[in-house]
Picture 1 (cartoon, one colour):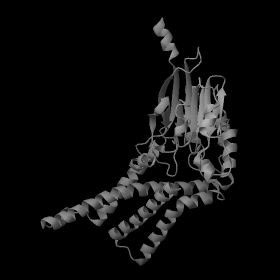
Picture 2 (cartoon, rainbow, N blue to C red; picture 1 turned 45 degrees about the horizontal axis):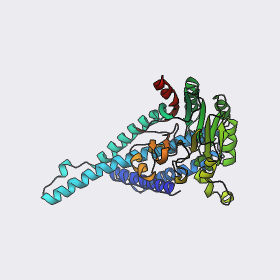
Picture 3 (cartoon, rainbow, N blue to C red; picture 1 turned 90 degrees about the horizontal axis):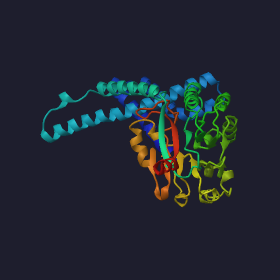
Length: 389
């Protein structure tokens, strides 16, 4: 919630910044200034209004409003960041002129330039980011272990994270994920949360499409924070209709090959009726599983339970999106201790944090492409046997 409020405050400041830049560049009169102010106020509230309207509005109008509102968010981000750079240039030029007693006004940028150039940059970057968000990448990770049973040389796991199916991310993005899964044919498919977005009306049919994709060891999922934003009952039903087995503070051993533990997202603790629910700790759940099997933990956020270290081999997480938009990721890497990619942990455990396959808010990714992660768990026993021969 604190992170959400922080970014919402920055977004509001960005809209106010646009108001100042436009007013200064075009010398707006009172009527035009009032109109611009009302428009920007409306756009500032759009992330909240989009959710409310999607609950009652038609699908087409809800989607059009969502695109307008969220694309504006991306434009504001790029405009604000690039505009500040030009303002700093003007400020440093003015200060240099004052210090050295010289008239440097000739090399300063005009108010019109400090508006039009950032406007061009923000439009170009947002357009590029819109298409980059559609270029799904397959990231591959190889994890070696001695815990696979004899005769099993490799298990292939596909991790779907932060797909954010909803009013914007729909058929085309899901089709790309499904196409890759059908091509790779993983032994196991896992979803590490935010399969759904906050606006989840009009998309129930997508569960049937996802259900058609199978894996020989099954499909398992955990909740993310957006499942709670959109309505947890609806989200749980969608996930199960899509063919996933939900793991909510419990673990299973799949066909004697691999242990899988799922932990509910931390958003569960913020819901009043769940606050007093007593659940087993992660350590207790892990301790009940066969220790000689490769143990996989599914957890939406990249939070590590220190008491569990050494009891699991690999935790798969998402949530961070790796910032989704550069240079926002320079900020988010300081918010999340474990931000992106593969991280070795103490006592033989490890963590992988996915960038996610979809988008949250703006349907834009800039220098942070979406991903579908393929993890190959490879037995070291084969290598040992080969060496002995």
